[in-house]
Length: 220
Image (cartoon, rainbow, N blue to C red; front, side, top):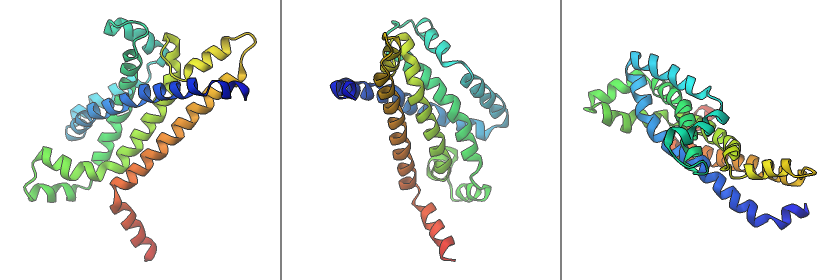
């Protein structure tokens, strides 16, 4: 406990870095996944290609991908962009299928009604399909965010791991510094819980009609 108290500033600074490394790829990955998921939902051939490919991307071991990034991007080994680029790939791999499934779950009658009202494909997507797909989409984003928060620690193998530093440094100390290791693990878990909770609240705030529907069912 004494070690934790003495290193609070370093732990907080690493936690901020950890969040940045984990969440920037979620935002970038979501922006990239939306059009890909829309294409996968709209055309069967595109889905047959995009969904399996995204699944294969997620099977790449994180350690191997982190090590390969400097070679692929031509960046320095300690550049944070290496970890962020790798996590963006994982985020896209997770979200493409989630978005395609979320859009596919929108009732055809709703889509047809929107088309009858004059909505074109893009306008219908943003005004009708995307809002109705938010519950499933948020669930996918929550999985991606929590996954990224855990994977950032692996980035310490190339010197960029946020709170992962304390796991590796504590394990390499002689004797191992278990307070340092436990503090790093506890903060990673805490960050994951906080981010997951905030995303769940955001999902509820963005879909007030789901609460009204639940209230109607209960009242009946």
